[in-house]
Length: 159
Image 1 (tube, one colour):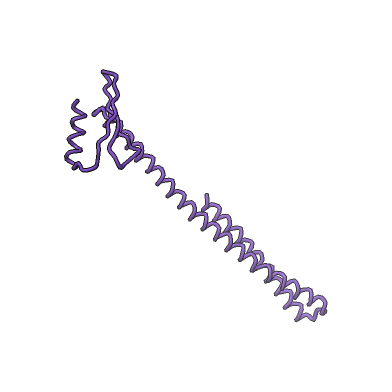
Image 2: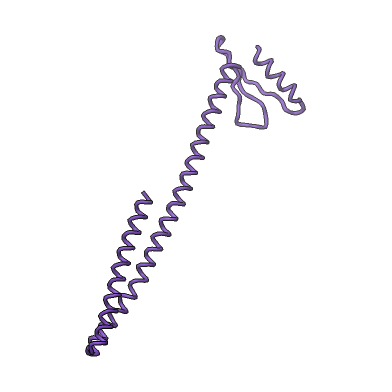
């Protein structure tokens, strides 16, 4: 879409520049012809004034063209940035969904639902579906080693 707009802006500006250039050339030709033919000073002044007006319009059209190109470039950069943010967001959502599914699978296999609210301690609930019992657990992390923590969790799983 932006490339189409860019092409249209280039065509419009280029055709407008060509028209201005034609008008300027015509004014110059009229002024030159008037000088050689001995035209009155009033007509010559009028032609000079017309030439100056056309020459003043040309830079503004060029300025407008560069403004349009700058805006298009800025929009393309913003589009790229937004697309990158969208990809990052989608990746984050996908990673979160994978983590939820893994956690659900672990809970189904081990019958343990961890409490992830406090990462400083290991706690959660042991669910025994056949007995309709939910038991809370909390492993103290004061001095146990990773081995002791792992053994405690295995004992809970094998109940």
